[in-house]
Figure 1: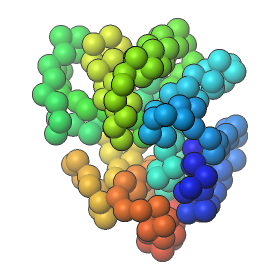
Figure 2: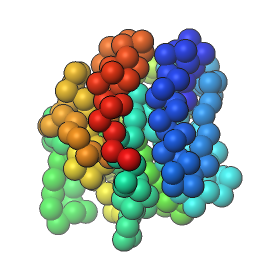
Figure 3: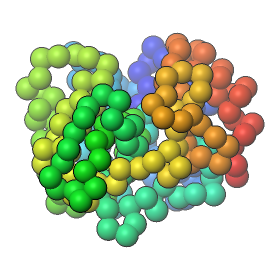
Length: 215
């Protein structure tokens, strides 16, 4: 999704996602409109994810506009094998110190909601419905507000079956902005360009990272 005010700066990032979708036979959808007109655009990802589940797609992959695919030899759907129903980047314990009784390895985690791979199943549908419900009850409008709610839900109700991916598995943030553990390396599945205005994010992608994509 890219709202109209930033769309002119997202053409190459959008094309990257479309090219990756075409490579693996995915149905690519791109919206320019916010679902929640009164909230930050990041909140609108959740109804769009729900729409994909409701339309009956076996998998729904949400990709923020500032995320790009950098290894076209790896299928992101493989992250759900063998028996996961959701996969996303675990940014680690930089924000929360969480000890879950559900896991044998009681690792703290904080999950990034900028790139999510979801299997269409009862568990994922319940999660997304709960996510929407909490967003619509929440009066805040923070940039990471929807991500905070997502993490709370996973920790409290939905941890089993969720793949807490490493950067080696799902990709990493660029070294040009903030990153929690390690920055992007050639061969990573994706890169997250999280810093700077949109003009500079796309320029950085085109001039620095686009030439390093593996096809």
